[in-house]
Length: 187
Image (cartoon, rainbow, N blue to C red; front, side, top):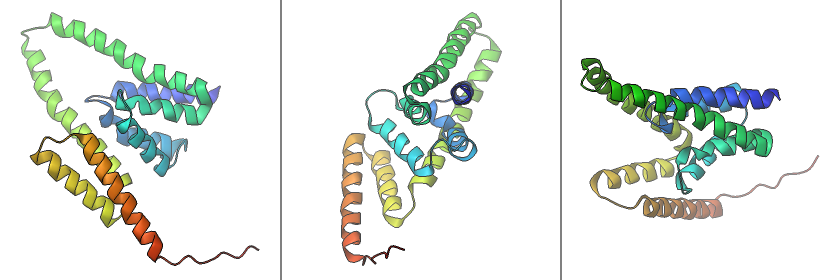
């Protein structure tokens, strides 16, 4: 029961902090799920995030996978409600207030202040995932090339994901063939 309570508490907190979208809370989600509670490893977090990016639907459905890893189907259900429900309620409340204060100078000031804050949080999330994912020259090259293509052209991201994955697969199949394998001797 304490695992379910911990899951609910962590993901409800992350839900409230998700200003600017789910990417904004990735560094804190990583810190809490990997470093603090040890629910997943760095590699598992990166793989779960990658799965959330390529799966259809909202990318933050990845939280369900973390909940499932920790406490099975019940964990996935708890995390789903904890991560999405508080944010929905808060958004509904803020939207009602937002409409009430239309034309207010405070509303305009808050709106102007939220844009750079949200962008900064999203960049922080992107940096956090980049630190986990870029661990050799090949992964850096794929990331840099992908960013360059996306900044200059309108290309379907699925195409870039496929080409990057294929390049990585070919690279590691070629390098694995050239690395001698030393047999291990059982004790």
